[in-house]
Every structure is written in structure tokens, then in C-alpha cells.
Image 1 (tube, rainbow, N blue to C red):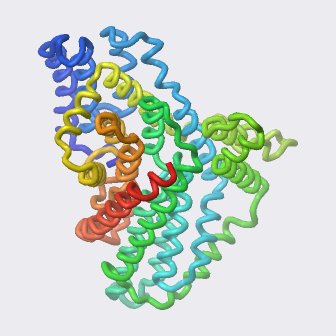
Image 2 (image 1 turned 135 degrees about the vertical axis):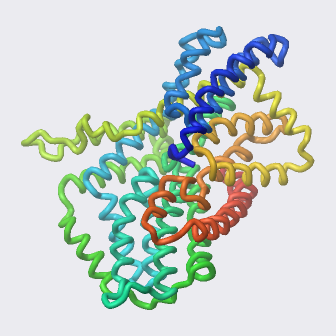
Image 3 (image 1 turned 90 degrees about the horizontal axis):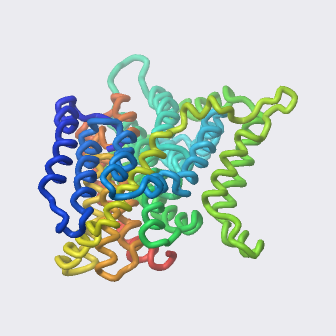
Length: 484
């Protein structure tokens, strides 16, 4: 779940329960528990988890608690507590945010999406395939919420072409077409994000925690070698399951669909100078991320990294003039009002909390206990992925990863295996929430269209969840060891 949707009573209870749990734990847990600071860190963690789950306070404000409390309790010095909030991974995501802002401001993402949809044809399943590809591709670079919001009105216009002028009734095939078109927008917006490091916040959290715990980095290109095939496989099998088995439409041709897409493109007009410049910067940044290692080999030094490439791409959006005569730039600082600053603070808070849990020995203790109970690494991996997929139906996927991944790293350390082998599949699973309207903003957005009921989404979501579970497990056993 990615947006605030809890009942006020839940929030009120959580608001009181968080600090109350903090007081109880700090009072009852003595210095002989794991380590002298373990009780204090556990108390802060419990407070944060309660507030994150209940959404009693804004999640980003909750993420500031370690910065305030850790130095006060003597757990860390202020300089140590503040350092995770300036982690390089946070600046990588900031650069990605800036690039996404430019794509949205100049409507380049809409032009790309419309052209992709036009290529796949105007049959029922052809249109659905086009929307799947377009939504998944756009979501690799900008937020799943923005992607879904952009694609929804286009999809509704296509669905309205099926409405009969002389009757309000629609056939089963037409109803199924509407359901699937809405679902693929939500599902592809979520799945597309796993293809790149910047595609969805859980990926960035995992990368930051991995670097913090094991001083291991995963490059943008290597992540794509795992994430892109998995996202294509989940979207592909999901498309087949939805269109062939769950909600077949059997519509051969949708009259007017091609004209509708052409009219939308006509409204956009020919590509403007601003769009061409944004496309050039976007392409240059993407290629630099993907081919970072070959570039560094040519340069003879590790000059390029994901963060400085991302920040360079973001900064260029503010520094490249769309019109030098008028001295107008692609982005101006006012545009950053739309930038998700709270997410960046949330990353920092999660990294700071994880550092506290690790330094106090809590993560190692929990990991040791679970490792001792595990009879099989394969079943453990399968269970962790399952837990990640189904828990994220009910809570924020970012909060889940911040809480869950440090424990997973502790388990990996005690089992003597690479933390990537357990951590990356769990992270990918956290983006696979398809069953409930409240699970992610894209789910809520398409559900609000009125073209489906909860039963339709639950039925489809359970099937896609299972497909994702199986494919991520296979990816963890084959792709992750092979590439990473």
C-alpha cells in the first residue's frame, strides 16, 4: 500500500501507541539485552513501525525521528545520525526525479506512450498490449502514480468508443475489455518500475541499504539485466492470463481507436524544441547509466557512477536553455514544488534506523534466530518473497523494505550467503501488489474509473501475484547469481 488510507481511529490509536511503546521499551529493556544501546534502538524502531503502519503522522516526518532521538539518547553522534540522510543513493533518486519532472512538464512521456499504443493495432487485445508496453516503459523512468494518471484518460476515451449510441448495455466482451484495459494500466505502472534502479522507491532503498551493510554496489546496467527481463516476463504472462483466460474480450476491431490516438498526437502537435532537448538529455543519461562500465574502462578511471550521472542529467534540465534569447530553461526551480522531497527524507530515515539496528546488534540477533530455524535456503527464499508480495498489499512498500531488508541481510549473514541473493528478490516482490484498490495509487486510480469491482481486481490480482512470485523466485535462482 502506497498512500494514506487508514481509518482515523487506526491513526489515532497508532499516534498514541507509538510513543507509548517507546516509553515502555526504554523502561523495561535493560542494558544487558543484546547490547547496551539495543533497547533504545528497538524502542525507536517500534515507534517508527507503528506510525508507518498506522500512518498516524506523515511517513517522512516519522523518518526524521532517528535524527532527533538517536543523538539525544546517546545512540549516535549528530554527525553520524545525519550522514544517512545525505547518502549518494538519495541524490541518485533526486536526479531521476528532476528528469521525470522535465518529461512530464513538456509532455514527452505522453507522446512516447501514444506512439507505442499506435504501433500495436486496434483490435481489443492489440490495444491492451499497446497500453501495457507504453505504461510499463514510461513507469521505468517516472512514478507509477504519474504514469497511471497520464494513461487513464486515454484509456477511458478508447473504452467510450465501445459505448452504443442507442443503448446503455454492453456485451460481456466489451465489459471484459474495459476491465483488462484498466487493470493493465495499474499493473504495468507497478511492474515497470522494477526494471530500473530509479523506477520505484523500494529499489533505491535496497541499493542504499546494501551499500551500507555490505559495501556492495549494483550498477544501473546490471540491475536492468535482472529487472528488465523479470518485468517483461511478469507483464507478458499477466497480459496472457488477463486477455486469454480471466477476461477474454474477442474484439477484432475497435472502430475509431486509431483516429482517437492520431487526434491525441495531433493535439500535441509536432515535436517542439523543448521536447527534443529533454529527449536528448534523457537519452544521454540513460545510455550513460547503462554503459557506465565501458565508459569508465575507456576513461581508465571510475569517474562515472550512477549518482553523478543522475544528478548531471537532472541539473542539465535546469541549465540547458529552451530559448536562449528569452533565457528560458527546460525546468525552473518552481517546478521542484512537484518533486517528492518527502520520499528523499524517508530514504534517509530508513538508512539511519537500519544503521542503528545494525550497530546495536539487533539485526544480527534476529537474523541468527531465523537462520537457525531455517531447514532449507530455497524454502526460506520462497517464503521471504511470498511475505514481501502479500504484506505489501496492506502497507507501504517503501516502509516494508526499510523494515524487512535489514532483517533479510542479517539472515543472509548468518547463513553465509550473498545478501543480494535474498534481498533483491524480496525488494522486487514489494512492487507486486495487485489485489486491492488500496494496495497502490495506480490500483486506486483505475478502480475509481468504475469499470470494475473489487471482486474483479482481487481475482486478477491473485493470479498476477502468483505469476510474479514464481517468476521472481526463478529469477532469484537463475538471473541474480548469473549476473550479480
